[in-house]
Image (cartoon, rainbow, N blue to C red; front, top):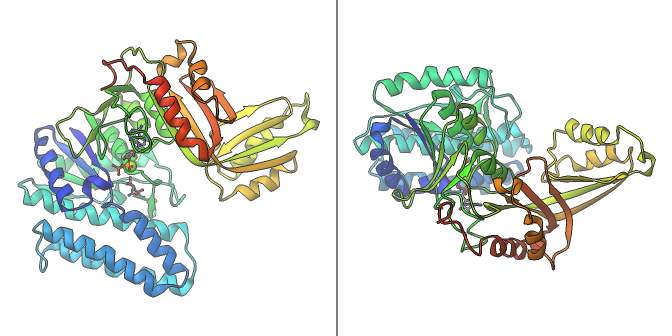
Length: 457
Ligand code: ADP
Ligand code: ASP
Ligand code: MG
């Protein structure tokens, strides 16, 4: 068995869905399970509908919803899915009717809760997978539409719910096994789940990759394939550096670190279930299905380059806490971290001196509450519009001189924080956001002037 996950661009329209059917057709013997995202930009648009409605702009929200509906109907029509009696057509009608009701309710209430955001966002994946099921059928492959909400069981932390594996693993086996046994291809929504009380949740933006790994681990598949719009994991984001090269093979550790520090190609949680069962993950280009992509595996072969890839994350805020009272005292760090924990805000980069601590966060919703708390401990300074740049490679453990190369590449850029350590396979810098493109290009030039042909294309 294998899991094949298709991201937004890989299901964005009729053409993409036809390519998908060919990819699955070529892998029929491997017993594929399909996991799919919403079509193209649907998730963003649905969330915009919800926001617009809750601001009282009922008609604008309904108009946008009508546009989203039109796109789904148009692409299904192009795929030869009948417009009148077909169950897909009925499903699309029903879902949009439900969403219109939600919009009217939201407009009347004027309040948007995370729970409603998840309810609305979930329609994106439910629509795309309904269409896809019929596309596979029309291409001669018996397929079965599944409901991820019966399988991916989560807590009620809406918009970023945590998966409860004790319940999820058996539910996936119970629902998917009989379908696979019967020779059908299960078509499963990424990104969405439900609480034990069957209330719809989502597991965080970009979460379909994670769903693929959750399903793959539960079924103990041979391969988890992440089909996307680039050639694989590249030495950096090709949108920022077009010369970025494809990485042929990378370790689980390196890939997690890259994902965590912003490489959008993989959701940061994806690797965890795969590691649990040591299942290889492939990242592949759905536009070029014959290319080999990137293999993520337990242990990557030795590489001549000190760094394997560079990731970045923008919209970062740095929080500095200084307290001279804390000189030689203990408990300072604990109190600071307890505050972040209390407000459930993750900290990415940390650096400390005896009397001060700098931390970065990429989420500012609870920031002012946190600052109020931290002010009880010391003087607090907050600076926004920062970026994290992170160079990752298993070789950082062995090859000396990596910081020297990085500092030389960044010599004209003010570095606000540096961190190397913890995982020992990354060196991370915090800089002003406006200098980011220059920094990433400079580092990429410095580290990939030459590239080990066994590892990079
Ligand atoms: P999908 O919709 O298939 O999940 P995403 O847009 O979430 O696709 O992720 C793919 C995008 O990730 C690419 O188009 C690319 O711009 C971006 N990206 C960022 N860093 C990297 C990297 N190191 N390698 C490849 N792609 C990257
Ligand atoms: N559709 C969801 C999103 O846009 C999940 C995903 O595509 O991975 O965030
Ligand atoms: Mg994605």
